[in-house]
Amino acid sequence: MDDVASQFIAANQTTLNLAVALLLGAIIGLERGWGARAQKSGERIAGIRTFSLTGLLGGISAVLAEEITVWAFPVLLLSVVAMAIVAYSERLDHIRNFSITGMVSMVLTFCFGAIAVAVDPVIATTAAVITAIILDNKEEIHGWVHKLKAHELDAALKLLVISVVMLPLLPNEPMGPGGVLNPREIWWMVVMIASISFVGYFAMRLAGTSKGILFTSLFAGLSSSTALTLHFSRQANQHPALNAQFATGILIACGTMFPRILVYCFVINRELLPSLVWPVVIMTVLLYVPALLIWRRNSGTSEVSQPTLSQNPLDLKSALVFGVLLTAILLLGDFLKDWLGDTGIYMLAATSGIADVDAITLSLTRMSNNGLAMDAAVLGIVIAAATNNLVKSGMAWVIGNRKTGFYVAGPMVLSLGAGLLVAWLQ
Image (cartoon, rainbow, N blue to C red; front, side, top):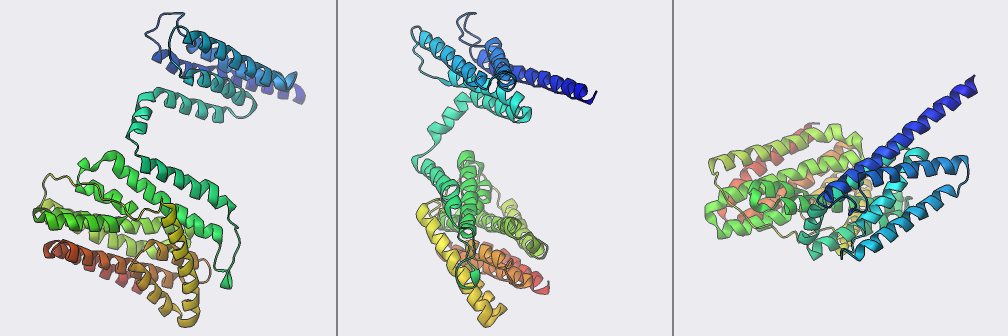
C-alpha cells in the first residue's frame, strides 16, 4: 500500500510539474505574441500556443529521460533548435530582421519546462518570469545601453574582474606578522567599497542632478563625500548666492558616510553594532537635521552639475592602492596595539582619517574580530570619522568661502563632539 501511495503521489507531482511547464511557456508566449499582435495569423513564427507547447515538450523530455532513455532530452532539444533555425531562416527571406531573440527564448522555454519537471519548478518559474521581463523591456534596455558611457561600462567590467575573477583566486588563510593579514578578506573589503561606490554613482547618474542638491548629495555620500565636498566648495565660491544650498549638500553627503560605517560593521563584525550604533545615529542626525533646517530657510530651485568622482575605487589602480592601504593599516594597527595599546589605535585612527575613513573603519572592524577591544574599535572609528569630517569642513572654508565654511563647521563640530562623547561614555 505504501508503494502504491508513493507512486500515486509521484504521478500527481509529475502532472503538476508538467502543468507548470505548460504555463511557463504560456507566460513567455504571451509576451512574444503581444509584441507581434499586429501581424496576421500565420505570419508569426511563434506565439502563445507554440511557446506553451514548447514548455510542455521540455517537461515531457525530462520525463522520458528519466523513465525511458537519457537521450530523450538532448534529441528533443536539438529538434527544437533545428525547427527554430529553419523557421527563422525562412523568415529572413521575407523580413530582413537578424535578431535571434525569439529563437533563443524558444530554446530557453524548452529548458524551463525540463527544469520544472526534473529539477525544481520554483527555479524554472523564477527564470521564466525574469526572461519574460527582459523580453518585454526591449526598448528600455536598449535605451540604457545607449545612455551608458564608455568609462561606466569599463567601471562595471572592472568591478566584475575584482569580484568574480580575482577574489576566488586569493588564498583564504592568515598570513604576515601575527597572522593579521588574510588576502581574500582584505580584497573582499576592497570589493565591498567598490560596490557601494558603484551603487551610489549610478543611483545619482540614472536619476540625474535635476532632482536637486539634496538628492545628489545623498547618493554622492555613498560614492565619495570628499569629491562632492570639493565640488560644492568650488561651486559655492563661484556662486555665493547659493552658499546655504551647497553647505546643505556637503552636510548631507558627510552624514551619509555614517550609515555606510554601520553597513561595514554589519557585514564584518555584527557584535560591534550595539556599541557603534548610538554614536553613529547621533552623529548622522546632528548633520541631517541642521542641513534640512538650513535648506528650509534658504530653499529655492537650483540645479548643480554632477561632481566628478575622481577617487573611484572601481578603477583597478585605485582598488590596488586601497588594498595596500588596508594592508598597511592592519599591520601598523597590530604593531601600535602591542606597543602603545589603545592609544596607538587612536593615533592611527586620527592619522588615517585625514585621507580616508573607509580603510581605517574596515581595518578596526576586522581587528575587533582578532583581539581588539570593542570600545577601542568604536572610539577609533568615531575618531577617524571626526577627523575626516573636520578636514571636509576645512575644505568648505578654504576652497569655498567663509559663509559656506560657517554653515558647515557648526553642525560638524556639534555632531562630532556628541559622537565622541557618546563613544567615550560607552
